[in-house]
Length: 354
Image (cartoon, one colour):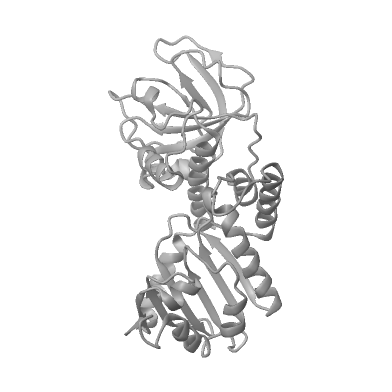
């Protein structure tokens, strides 16, 4: 192990260049990236045996406009240099890692404070260290890959670019460095989870169980009904219910409403119900092991979006639910975010079973 810094000639750029020269695959983990990857590919990739590059970065709604330039440049340079490339998103990412392989074997890794930007690799006072223990690097790589939320496919990139272009045409006075939010969750849900959420669909957060009789462990995979204390007039066919266990506040499943209208039965406490299908059946079978806590998800979203609203009324708390409400209509941006969290868990469980 040895230290790398930008204070001496042994800066990050020089070290990456040296390690790339003896590698055929590179994994880059960095929240911030070059706006233009041209110099990096000309200096590093063209003079090495690198054949594959995997980039793991962020793509939050408030950085989409600035980040798309970087992503398009990365893809352009990859094509130009005949590199097999892929881009993945982890919006919780803060660490910076540069991982080098040869013949599919991890040989070196740089763990550092330096983003893959000109200043990060050259000018800023950044420090990192290089490790060559293959076993340790393998463990680190597995940990990194588990944090990936989705792959940024060409289709997603093109749809996001189209949305940005449409936004700019309606906002001709836009000038950087403003960072307006360009919502992308609907594109990502449609492409990665094959679920379409039109604007007419509402998404609700719904408690199940009671404080007196909390749900601790229960299989929700085959659940076909969701119950309400009062007639749920606002809920219609194809709306989504994200249900969570009262007490533990962990999400138990996401359901699509099948009923054309609510149905009444003879019951004292929960006389109304709608027929549903579970769109997260694998997760619903083991939800109590996954700990998707609605408060933690909310707080993360508020931090990522600088307190964007979470309810359709513009609130940033679960107010009515804490006062005994049996449903809460969510702001579309937050609704798609929380749904994507559950669907990502569903996808991971499913893929680990096959």
